[in-house]
Figure 1 (cartoon, rainbow, N blue to C red):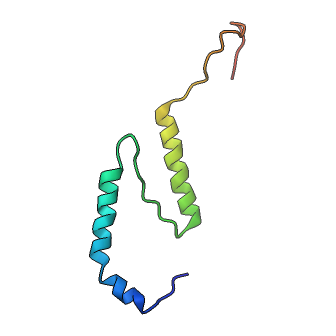
Figure 2: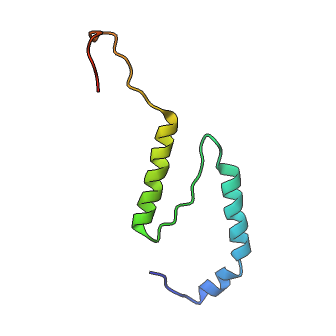
Figure 3: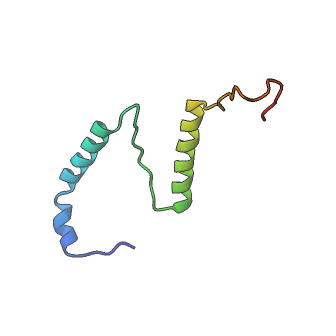
Length: 79
């Protein structure tokens, strides 16, 4: 729950500084190899869906495969 305090008015005067820092953090820290994602968290179901989608897409892009065990018989079928 959001609670209002008088100190919030003072903090609001720094909004532009916060947004600049936010933009800097995203632009300087998010890379192609280690991307950052903005996940809205005020709805748990949507947060969970967004994170699950990112994880699923990332795993699809990796295209993982089971390693082949050379000690297994050649006619063994793994499904």
